[in-house]
Length: 166
Image (cartoon, rainbow, N blue to C red):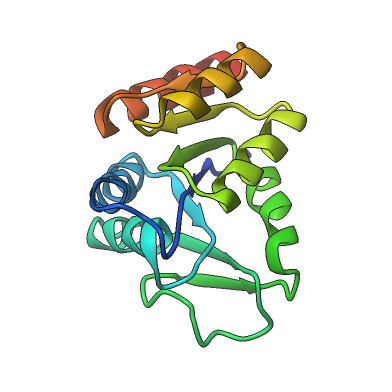
């Protein structure tokens, strides 16, 4: 029996841009349509909330890894809320539990998740217009960083990464 594919979508919460939110919503929907499980930070803001809502619109399964020991700030679109009481340390759980990580936009928490993913040899797809972070991470881990220009190329890259991982 094979393990279900878990795709982690990481990105800014309160500082997410309109483009980040639009991309996250579309990613959530496309991930669910592929039959993959969506994993996010689980909160009801920014990229996390938008990706979960997109996945639920497509009847997908969503997991939220929450930094707290309560569900007050959980997205309504999270099916499985995992309470960690770990604060930002929960970022390591996010990346270790995902087959592929997508950084949808850039924030400080997202940067830490990208770094943790690379340290753990996990592939990361950057869906962001932030050139400096693309250049930095591509230089640090050229074999693990992939740049996407839109949500559909992101899904194609995930397919390639999953195929090559077998």
